[in-house]
Image (cartoon, rainbow, N blue to C red; front, top):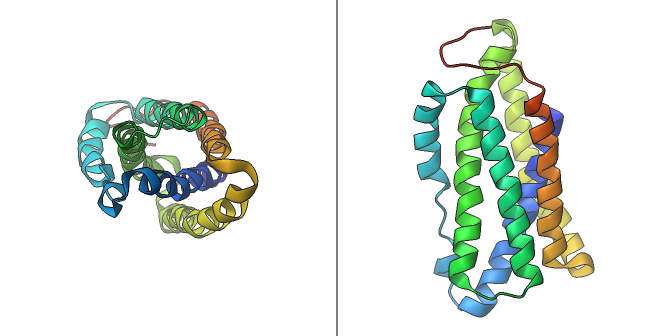
Length: 178
């Protein structure tokens, strides 16, 4: 699960790096670059995880992130140049990521023994923080060579690792314990 998360987190950082570089040239506004619904989504995700099977929530949010990355690739390929379309296509995966990370943290205690929980939480944090550093470095090196569309496509492919890992998890209904 953590190996898949690092691949997915790296892919997400590729998109996070490219989007501002794509929005700013045709919007001329750094304010548009900063809009992000991720925090609000994390709030409703906690409530959603309390009433739904957490595995299904993880599958849905991860697949949604992959689909929106494909749509970002398509708009880059079409040279759409629409701030509105980009904001929707960026806001959706950010909201889904906020929901996914909230639910993922709630799943960890169900997958590991209580004495391993501190180590599991540390590993999960390390995965996300490492991707936050390595992803932009990777994107900065790759962008001139392969372009923004290919980076979006790489993000979409990277999400497949998490979808596969989550698919292999057992059902995680609300209220159930290990």
